[in-house]
Image (cartoon, rainbow, N blue to C red):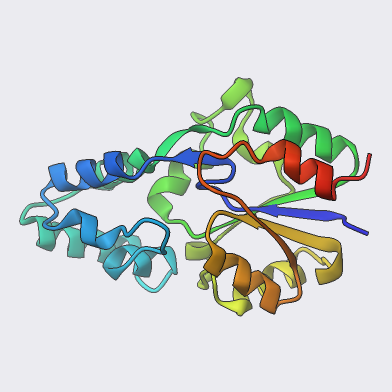
Length: 209
């Protein structure tokens, strides 16, 4: 019986935009900004390293400042990275609340970084007047765990930490590679496309009313 719903952030809970973020990083002075952010894949270079927790915020800022040839602040990086966010998937917050009231446990598992999370977790990001984190039982972030999707170990970590059984859990992501990692941990998966209106189909296939 399905009890636990785990969602990715970008492309699932939110609709992502790619070109705007690349434009913002290029505007910061990052050479070949697009080479770090290949659509449909996890980020490369220092961007992937900070998302996996392999390097600290301070190390990342030092490296990107060197690449840009000038000092770059936390706030400047956060603004550039937030360029990936376009808007929340329509009606997603109401649906999350409905699923929670039906007894499902809700989680986010995201490959993400301190710059994005400073806003997502902050009280300033309060859609419908409510802090975003309150819609979930817990938000799992790669940079905080020290593991990243699609590594099987990150899914096993989430199952153990949340005291979840794999056969009672489903994971929703917009990257097939990440769903393959979840499957390796014994978790059912549901693959969506960025900007797709996926909620009704997912509910029809997986939610018991």
